[in-house]
Image (cartoon, rainbow, N blue to C red; front, side, top):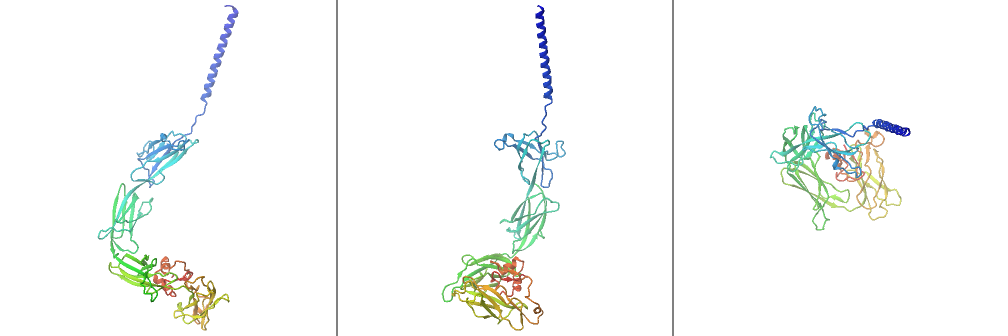
Length: 507
């Protein structure tokens, strides 16, 4: 080989060595660059626990996680993962009742708890959790479950006959801090079925309104039960029921005009009330299409029966109140007769003595139209109870919707304790009489009350009658008896007839 050829071979060898060195350097540099890439440390895991209603750990539960498909928004069953709660206390893995899901994918997941007989959820048994980027710790969830136990309560009388309609109340006892009172009503079999949480409970009973009963077992009408799983527990109340088989049948009759030779006809839809001797309501109801209403299962004893008259168009044609005594199961019949009254234009009111609000008879009352061209009725005088009535013709065009100043005359030796005049407007069509807004009230000169100025006010006499009101119903709504209402309103002759806007006293 010549010298030129050797030089060429040497140069080629050097070039080859240089290329190898370059490749080696690049590989080392590349390896160094790859070793310095960052490592993601975001985590997608969920830890949780299950507790009971008393906020104590609860074990033996299965928790399921299912991911939502990001494209369809629906749960993807193929992603379902089940874990079991830790069921051994002091476990090295975690606390009792706890669980954990590791290595979940980023996205939206649904978590649910399995079912167990006798348990129900306190918090939702299924809910969604989103696992986005950005978490370096597991998210925490919790399920709260309640173990319920069935308690059957039987209610019977001394003949062991089931008693329906009784309220049984279960109230949390000592130490039962996480429970609330529950009320159930006994059914036709005398049963009230409760589903309660474990713990101490006190059971009491409430008899239906109008029932007269006495507890037999337990003697005080209350009993305590330590409710424990799994149940069921069975307890019983026994009562002695007094009476309960009494019956009253009330009829409302429409009395035909005299000489019509027609028989009375039943009046449907009229209200009848049965009151106990203390004035409280034992029963009430409306007459049926035949004019009859029946009150059954009333305890034996004395009652009064009252009809309710409508505000206008009718008047009583017989007694409106009856006294009855129930002594056996035979129904006592009460009949009310009513007569239709022709509608009219009239004004009614009363004149009373401030001393006791007793009516003042023989007092002249006048009515002057506020428009001089309207009809002018004559003066009238109060009757023996202090009442007056001013009548107007029903066929005079000047009467409908006219307004009048109704005034009392002044009498020597008496001082007015109310305004001596008041405005009253008649309706546009005939109907019931229009009542004055207040009773005219006077005090004889010389009494201490007459030395003051202005009207004497009576405490509690500021209730304005509304449509549908009745004197005894107003009393019941305010916890007053029928007798108290009658005594406080002596000016009301018929407790079934009060007018809208009238002022009455509530003692």
